[in-house]
Every structure is written in C-alpha cells, then in structure tokens.
Length: 407
Ligand SMILES: Cc1cc2nc3c(=O)[nH]c(=O)nc-3n(C[C@H](O)[C@H](O)[C@H](O)COP(=O)(O)OP(=O)(O)OC[C@H]3O[C@@H](n4cnc5c(N)ncnc54)[C@H](O)[C@@H]3O)c2cc1C
Image (cartoon, rainbow, N blue to C red; front, side):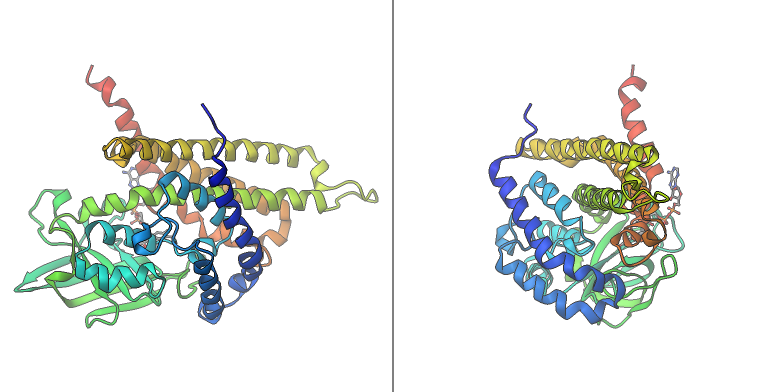
C-alpha cells in the first residue's frame, strides 16, 4: 500500500495552491465584507487568470473546456480549493453548477448542451437546482408536491421551491417536478430546464440564514413556478427519471463536498495553530501563549487526528469509486455505504474543527475579519443538505445489516 501521491499530482496541487495564495486569499476580506455583486467584476478577472493558467473546471472533460481530472485527483484539488470560500467559484467547480454540468453532460440533448452546458462550463452563466420545497420533506423527495403536466408539445410546471442555492443571478434553473403521481415513488418525477427570464418563473426572496440573506452566488432563494410553460425539449433526461438523475447528481457531489470540507478543516487548523502560537496570555510572561495551555494542545492534537482519519476515509471512497468505474461497474452504487459514512462523518469533523478554531480566536473568531465566521455560519448546513446525517446513518446501517438479516 502506497499513500504517497504521484509526482505529477503533487505538482498539479502545488499550482492550485500557489494560485490561491497569490490571487485568491487577498480577495477574501472583500468577499466576507462586501455585497457579492459589487466584487463580481474583480472575481471575473481572477477567473480569467485561472483559465489562462489552464486550471479552469478541473472536474469536467477536456471536450467541455475542463481539465478532465479523475474523481481521486479532483478530490485532492477540491481539498486545496476548499481552503478558501472563493476557491471552487473562482475555478469553475462550485455547487450547484458543477452538479448541473454533470447532469447535462450525461443526460442533456445536443440542443440543451449547446444552449445551456457550453456557456455554463465556460463560466459565462450560472445556474441553480430547485428540488427542495418548504411544504414537503426534502429528505424524502418522492413526496414532492411540484407538478409538471404535459400539454401537447409543452409541460406546464407549478412548483414552490426553496433553498435553491445561487438562484440570484442564475440564468436557468433545473427543477424537479412530478409528471406521473400514480407511478411507483421513484418513477414519479422528471427534471426540466427553465430559463429564469421565462414567464411563470419568479424568485421570491433570498432566505436569510442566521440573519443574512446575502446575494448572488453565496445565497439561497425561495422560488415559484406558476403555470410555467416550457417546451417538452426542455425536459432533462427521460420522463420519470428525475429521482435517478438526482441521485446520480448527488453521488459525485458528496465526494466533492467532503474534500472541500477537509480543505475547510485544514485552513481552520492552520488558523487555530497560528493564533494559539501568537496570542500571549500570561500576566507578565511574554513567552506564555495559548499554545502552552494543555487544553488547547489537546484540541490541536484531536483536530489533527480527526482530519487525517476523515481525509483517508474520503480518499478511500473516491479510490473505490474510480476503481469500480475503471472495471465497468457503477462506482457510486458499489460505494453507497462508504458515501453515506463520509457524508455525515466528515461534516461532523469539519464543524468540530471550525468550532474549536473559533473558540481559540475568542471574539475575533465571530467577526468577518477571519474566514472562520463564514465557515461557521455557511457550513452548518453540511449536516442537512445532500441528505441529513440521520438519513445517511439509517441508510448505511440498513445496508450494513442486510447480509446478516438474510442469514
Ligand atoms: C445551505 C443549504 C443549501 C441547500 N441547497 C439546496 C439546493 O441548491 N437545491 C435544493 O433543492 N435543496 C437545497 N437545500 C435543501 C436540502 O437539500 C434540504 O434541506 C434537505 O434535503 C433536508 O430537507 P428538509 O430541510 O426539508 O428537512 P426534512 O426532510 O423536513 O427533515 C428535517 C430533519 O428530520 C430528520 N430526518 C429526516 N429524515 C429522517 C429519517 N429518515 N430518519 C431520522 N431522521 C430524519 C433530520 O434530522 C432532518 O434534518 C439546501 C439546504 C441547505 C441547508
């Protein structure tokens, strides 16, 4: 067993890391303290530099202007980019666009690819994904209330959605709605592409999270589709395949999120160690810092152990998926238990590490003078989106017990 990375991978990661140090970290304070749209032109310049450096959209195939990295390599890149809240956005691999790109590559018609995927992959437009509803449980999307009724060559969509991330400023939404309420639960819904300037689509508001509604890419909206008529050619994939496509979309998304979370752990860990070493805490003795306190030392050691273990678990999962796909099997199906385990485990590790880093910073940790407060508030959702902890625990336990139950 060899845990070292090939030299080319190390060199690639160093390029991402250098770029982050040079061009991304200096923008963070503006991102944390100013409205998104006011700094968007500055961010666009950095995105152009990313493209010039050949580091754009590492996760999508070269044919679509990306780098075509394997899941394992992209997982490692995602860890580096996750160290800044701007990393994934500036390199063209941010949620929800990355998931929508994957779905369009796999299921889009030629026309949909030209009209929606090409500009999305180039970073010329943004998109959103509208599945969750205020009035039905997001944890069980077979209960969706949204309807899309076939009418001649069109579908008419009526839906009330919320937590549609990045809808503010998005050019189109991928919306999930029930097309056949009488079908078996997993065959009821379909996906549709709806341009956001289409009649019948309305963004109602950006939902305040912990008191902040935000705007643009880092925001989450409530949206309505009212008698929203789209041509049947806007259906994404076959009728009734909505649930299967949503699952397919979430598989790679969970690996990407988990490695991004490891990146957040790494950044928080670095900040925690730095602050502990610099903060003088003694009455008169200037050599006495927070780092001398055993309780802080314990947090640092525990955090390091938790990060290392979480990282190995995610990388093993990504490796298993890559291996299965290499042998012609559905990697995400093979690795369902592993994906559930990393989803809740890594989210928990991240939130504990960020919380300790905030604590070491004292009041400073709560301000927008450090990225920690952003991580703390924006990443609490990690235990809820893409399947809450409890759903993954129940699913993993059921699958783990299956062979025993059959004896
Ligand atoms: C930051 C953020 C971004 C999001 N972005 C998007 C997006 O872009 N598009 C989109 O469509 N949705 C998005 N969501 C919504 C997200 O997918 C849902 O919140 C999630 O699926 C949970 O659904 P719910 O909120 O309706 O909770 P519910 O389904 O009502 O569940 C509430 C709680 O009940 C518990 N629970 C649920 N099921 C079980 C079970 N089987 N066993 C035991 N306990 C259970 C869990 O603790 C869960 O947290 C986002 C959410 C957040 C927080």
